[in-house]
Image (cartoon, rainbow, N blue to C red; front, top):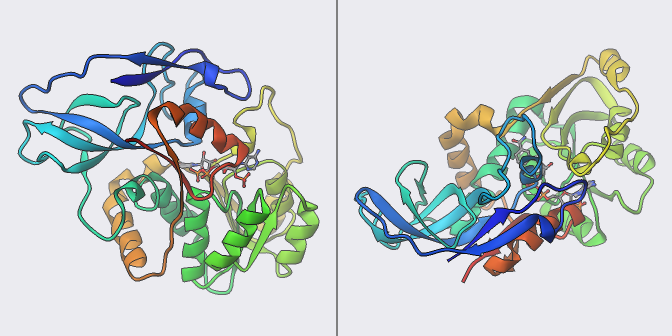
Length: 329
Ligand code: NDP
């Protein structure tokens, strides 16, 4: 029964050295408990922030303690009526092959068309981040231009497709030619490879009528370029800033405030925690769009418990298209 602990806090780009594997006994579930076997582990960019010391919107991982994150697990033994043996749950749990849990925080995955792992992606935290961040903060209208950065990732592909459902013109930025082709295939109007193009020129060409909504997953030079194209009354949702998660110094860049002022634009950061009370609404709508064939989803699946740290590190090299998932035997 392997578990993965935080071995040390990274400086800059993390490495496998920051993680440590340990083997433990398989625990026995007591009254009111279940034994869970991990089936799919979610690796997510926000976990990089939890590897650091210091106050944030979510507590840091502790050195010498298991890493915790989103997981789909199967009930192997049960002393809880609501969770029979064989049922699948999604929860925030330690990276461990087998573990005992009481029912709290275990969400039963309903039988349906969507694969269970989608509850870590389209129908889980990333999908709902896209849904609420785009619809609540950006509020795209038909005919408007929406830009999404990190467009080929778990959140980005859902943002772009919802913006299309709402009738917007959608531009995505991503880090490879394969990702650009994939975004076009998904229905994005324009897709830009930010690694090989002059970003300001490519964005200006893709958005001849300016930008009304910007869903920012990455920050940095892409975001600087979008701010030059804002239309009056633009709405910007700051979802993530992955280009800076491994920075060792405070990154500096152009100061956008005057551009926001001149365009009466609204800039709002958010975390998905703001929307926990509306979770069922989001899952219901995303499930309906998926079952109606209006939303597609994609996963990059790595196999094996020992590959979890590598899959996590791959997020910072753009190795995933769609949701990065680790599948366990
Ligand atoms: P992704 O599936 O998008 O994976 C990360 C992607 O980021 C990589 O595939 C890579 O794609 C891109 N990337 C990595 N480094 C850089 C860089 N230096 N500059 C630009 N792009 C880079 O992850 P998610 O969809 O899960 O998350 C997307 C963003 O949303 C993250 O910033 C995350 O922290 C944030 N987030 C925020 C939430 C909230 O509550 N506010 C909730 C969930 C996610 P590429 O090949 O294009 O470089």
